[in-house]
Structures are given as C-alpha cells and as structure tokens.
Image (cartoon, rainbow, N blue to C red; front, side, top):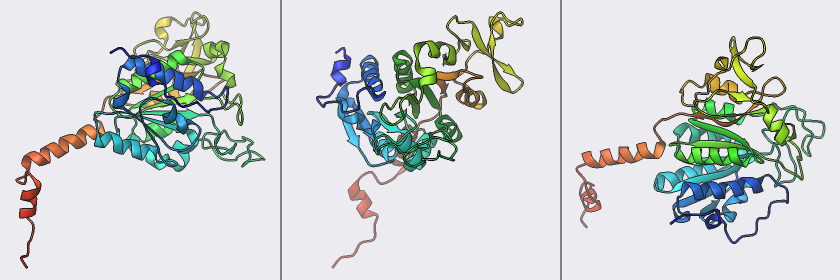
Length: 333
C-alpha cells in the first residue's frame, strides 16, 4: 500500500507557537516517512522533555513521551528489545545536550540503529527563555541577564568525539535538504543524528536569521552531497579548497581557480578530520555546512547484541527453562 504524509498525521492539535520552526520539521518528517514507506505500526517515536519533545503526539505511530534527557536511553532500549521497529528520537538542544548529554554520547558511541532529530533553537523554550548549552557566549536571557560567559556546545563536535557514524544538518525553512537528510538518516545503519536549526519566535526569534533567508542560504550556506564538489553561491561560482590544514572559500575563475580545484565531499571516510572542519565552518569567512556531513558504515549495537545472544544459545547445553532449573542446586523438604 502506498503511504502519504496524511497517514502519519495524528488527530491531535499541534500546539507549538504559530511560526515555530518545529512545524516545518514535523511536516517534512511526515513527508519523509511516507517516502520511506515504513508503516506507522512499525515506527516508534521517543522523546524527552521540551517543545520539540511533544512531537510524538503529532505523529500517527507508536510514541513514548519520556522524562527529561532520557529519550536516548529509552529509544536505545526500544530498538534493542525490538530491532524490527524503526525508531526515531525527538530532542532539543537542552534536553539532548544538557541533562541528556551523557545518554546522548553513549547512544552515539554504541551506534544504536535509530534516527535522532535534534532541534536546536539555542534556548530553553518550554521553560520560558533560559540560555541553553548551544546559546552563544554573551547571549542575554532570563538566566543570563548580563550575557552568558559559557562557551557553546557544538553538537557535531560532541558527536564526532563520541565516535558518531552519521551527522547531518538542515535549516527548518529548507524542507528539501531536511527531507533528504531524514531519508539518508533512516537508510543509515547506526545512530543517525540530524541537527535542525529552528527558530523560536517567542524567546529567541531570528537566532538563525543571518543564514535562513533564501538569499542568505545561497551565499552563506553550502549543501554537501557525497561524491560531489563542494560548490555554493547563488551563481554556483564559489567553492571550498584546502589552504594548508584549513578550509578556504574561493571564487571559481578568479586567481586561476578552476572547478577541478574544488574539494569533493567524502561523507564515508572514517577519518573525521575534514568532517569536523566542515561542521565547524562559520560566517563570515566560510559558509555554514548543511546536508549529510558524515555517513560511515560500522556495526550497529542491536545487531551485534542479537548475534552475541544467538552464539551463546548455540553453544549452551541448556535449551529451555526446565533444563536451567535442573542445573541449579536443589533441596527436597
């Protein structure tokens, strides 16, 4: 049976604020799920606490609204207990990277086969405007009235440091790149983390405004595709090259630069040195990287667990519960 996005819409009213970037992400997710073709009854969506963590209510699939920061642990358990389920985790920059940081890095380290949708609006929205782990240094909020003195977390750096195998990034307003990243994440075997740069219209409006408009996206971001040259710009005349150990943006046709000089993206190399450099790019010197930055094949946790259990069962002389009881010390009264 062919699925449509309507098959993944629940009967619940979506209660995010009008204009919130989360609306675009869930609408794109429903379209991506229809294209992927996994039936709703074979999908489980797990979340923690926060605005983005209300997502399971708005999807027609199995859902688990868990507790603050523990979505990764519960999603890992769901996938390990039933590897046949397609598991998605919805989380925010606070839920995932603050109280849930330890669970996040270990689910990434284990490479559990699930898809993590990380909504990053650089603020605690549900609890009304406190700075989060991704708020930039100097950010003024209710809990930092004179500006936070903390250095912001980079989700990509955290993931790569934990041995992550898949990382993608997309803007909430760029539904085409978002959908492609979701589908690629689903097709990846292992923990696929997709960071969405979303807008919070109430407490942090315009946090990604410098790169989110259509005109800015063309000049200030680059959508990476495996096996293709790293070219960007409204006229497709800019690209990335290596300047020593660093990345450099150049204009094709100037100073003898040819298209053949532009770096070709390799998302599948296990060495994450260049992936990290791409994820760290910032304006104004370099474009902000979007799309699939890393997609490396490695063993996934639940598959290895199943293999181990099968091997132990094969070697064991005990084949059922009655035989197990017979091996234990017993007393007759």
